[in-house]
Length: 426
Image 1 (tube, rainbow, N blue to C red):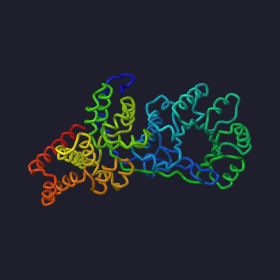
Image 2 (cartoon, helix red, strand yellow):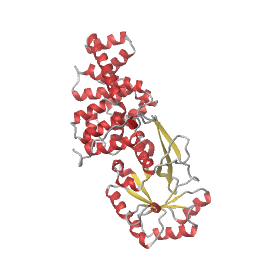
Image 3 (cartoon, rainbow, N blue to C red):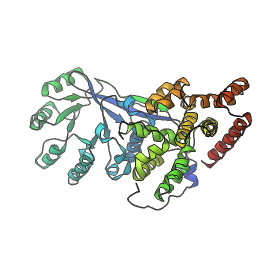
Image 4 (cartoon, rainbow, N blue to C red):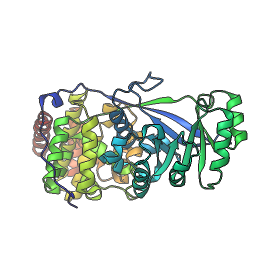
């Protein structure tokens, strides 16, 4: 699938290639509860570090984009949300930006702050987002003749109990009850008395410090360089062959990991992604360009563990080379993933079982990574034995695979050189 429009090639500048590295992603999460205190949603909030209790925002658009990016590529959406919906505040700029189209609309409620909007253009904006499949929440919208169209388009109304007195809230609830499908959320509930009063008034859902403070979640992340993302963006923009794009991903561990996580978390179907080429085919050029654009906004220049990244890439290439005489092209692609991802637990400081489960990898890849079983396991074992200079194990495995020792040594050398070249290009 080709992109629908062309843009000018993107240039790499010294400033872009020297951005400071970050190796953790943060997101705030506050639950929204029903009358039985069951979680029906989480509001996702921008956080700049793990100790932040509130957002420190200098650029609202960038903050929104980082929340979207962390939800899509840095954190597993199922782990982050469970079965609940994500409530995400959006700025007017984000409505016209690519990241909005990347969100899994069936799981997301977009929050519009009425005070920050031009009420004349808001209905059209809401209609646009509803066409994309999103549900809509309007914040602090009181009943007015000129807002009826907005109410009819909304799925949720959120009212600040610290801002409005009980009489105003009661009148609002009474009016909004004329719309049976509309759900009312009382936000910023800080005391038991406020909670009981809102329940008595007839609110459906509740959010605030009395019920639960926002918690800040963090994960260790690996990020591609801005140069790498820009290079790929230019290739996609030029409609480069999918094989060329696949090669770029295979040369970059961070991109491969983020691509597979995004594909498996963003609602592209229930089928397992079999390879990087398969993932690119599912995504398509247009969606790939948008996803890379999102990464560019939030990416940083380098990981804090370049040596580990290089070793992981070498593992992938080594496994691919030793498997070449035995396996078809698609299986060798999987061997590359097995070799490279076998070091994810070290790079991300996260148990490998959890990473494999979150990526929803095919069973034969997962079995090789987790249990060292299946058709890919002997090749991975051989790679690891060679790295560890366990020559007795190398000899045993090479005999079982009928691989001459000189072939293994040559493949190992070629893999190391290839990985060094790839990292130097990033």
